[in-house]
Length: 178
Image (cartoon, rainbow, N blue to C red; front, side, top):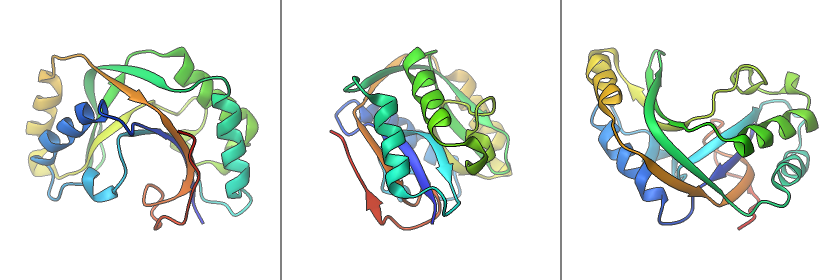
């Protein structure tokens, strides 16, 4: 079973990112983000090992966010992971809380159990906008990313630890703190 530890936006501000999803979907061979059935989010870690049980992940997330009710993040740039396939993502402005939460989770659960891209020193905070951009649309998508000249703010207000499509599995466990 795979588990992901996430924070997501379950409020009206999520529409800012969802609007970008629609714009980026024009470059994809098939729209990817709405297909997840999961609102705009940050993933702090994904664990594929059975040693990390849902309660362990949930407790680590709750300790990380203790005393915080929500997180307001500003996005001013769109960046990309080269792939293939090319992935466009919204880059958060530097945020101490986001970094602190990731570090706390990494201290609570040995990063050796985590997918390499989510480990300390490798993790890039990002909010994915599109994951299925074929090479034929690469240049157009990168031009779109480079031309982004806005500032949007999104409130991330729900934390969860879940077995989900974010990990490649169907949802089975989802704990929330609203």
